[in-house]
Amino acid sequence: MQCPECQSEHIRKNGKNRQGKQNYICVNCHRQFIESYETYRGYSDDVRRECLKM
Image (cartoon, rainbow, N blue to C red; front, side, top):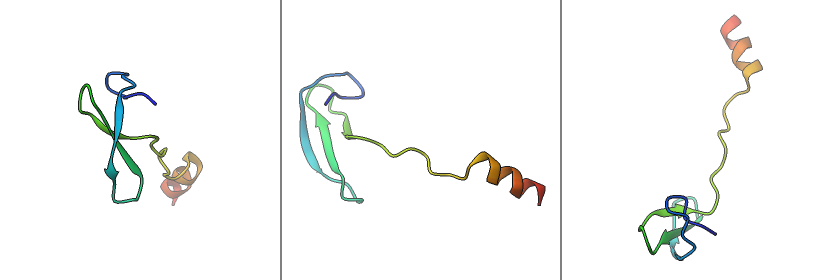
């Protein structure tokens, strides 16, 4: 795993966030992050177009 800020591989665990996911912190730049972020789960373009038509 690498730091998203400085790409260092020198990271440590740093507790858990509110959703229960593991937090990590970079030893070099002190950036806190999680292993993977979820993609945006909004409505599809088709649903948006239908709403605008209404």
